[in-house]
Amino acid sequence: MEIIVLWIVGILSLFILVILFVLMRRSSGGDSGSIDRTIREEFRAAREESSKASRELREEVAGAQQKTTDSLVKTGGELRESVDRRLKEIRESNEKKLDQMRETVDEKLQSTLEKRIGESFKQVSDLLENVYKGLGDMQSLAADVGNLNRVLLNVKTRGTFGEYQLGAILEQILTPEQYEANVATKPGSAERVEFAVRLPGPDEDRGACVWLPIDAKFPQEDYIRIVDAAEKGDTAGVQKASAALARAATQSAKTIHDKYIDPPHTTDFGIMFMPTEGLYSEILRQAGLTEQLQREHRIVVAGPTTLSALLSSLRMGFRTLAIEKRSSEVWKVLSAVKTEFGKFGGVLQRLGKQLETAKHTVDLTGVRTRAMERQLRNVESLPEEETAELLELPSAEISLTDEEEPEGGD
Image (cartoon, rainbow, N blue to C red; front, side, top):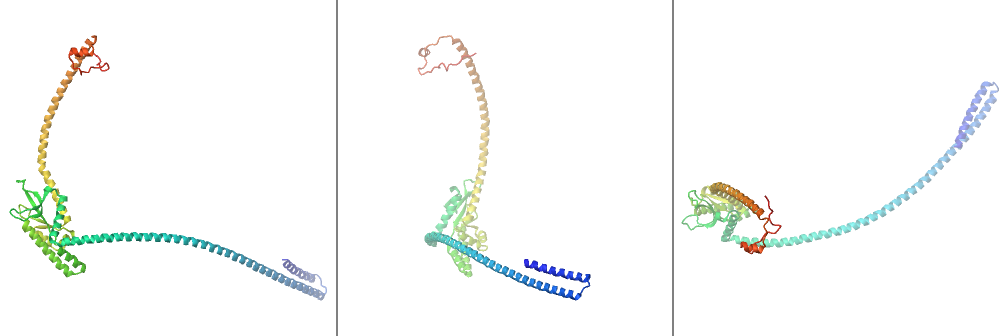
């Protein structure tokens, strides 16, 4: 900074000298040569001094720059060392924290993994146990199904199964008086239908009834052939088995019609019961089969659900009919009650009059009793024993105490 000031002062001094020289030239007309020499010498001295000052200034500036550069280099080195040291500390701290976090995570992962593996093994064990139980149940079920298949392969047993199921449905919906088993629906015939519903007879003969025949059929072989062919994708086999099932159903319907339907002793139609919904649905799938059976043989095909709905409708009809039959009896009873109620009103009226008369008599008796008490109030009372003996009262007669004696009054 001092060198810069000196350099500025030198320049100013040179400028002042130049000005003085100009002024001197103007003011004096002396020897210009000596003045020029003097000025030149002054200029040379000023230039040398200025050059020296500039050189010193350059040297000072260079030295200052060098010092500044050295200081910056030193400061940068110290700063870099400080940053490196700090970064190293941060890195070491982060590594230490990461190690701690890794240990913690490893411990938690290990414990969680062990817990999950234990739970998974337990679930697998429970599932395997359930599977073993299910296999046992399936084996038992397979054995039961095998037994059922063996039972159903027997035609007689299969018929018994259908009859049993039909009887169970009738028992659940109707009362014992509304149906019968093994009914001879045709007079003089030995053929007996499995079940028949008792319907009301004609109005002129209320004791008579009309039977609705219901017979169970179970053409299982044809149905099984249809199912097997459908599972194998055998279209021709399905068609063949379906045709056989239709023929069997038609033959069964013809048998029921010929054996059990005989109007007016029976309805003009009967019901052919199919014990399983699968068999019933397969009958319905045969195009036009049910309509043909109804049209040609007057037979209605029904499965378990359809028969239950039909019987429920019949039960509601029975109730409606019973209400209609009893309605006239109810009106007669109501008429008799109305007549007796009129008589009962007259009796109540006479009873009221009699009660009023008795009340009036009781009131008169009270008046006379109070009058006698006033007259006897001054009479000396006898002891109870003497009173009983004199009046010939029973020994168990209980007399009134002083608190219970009636008060006299007017």
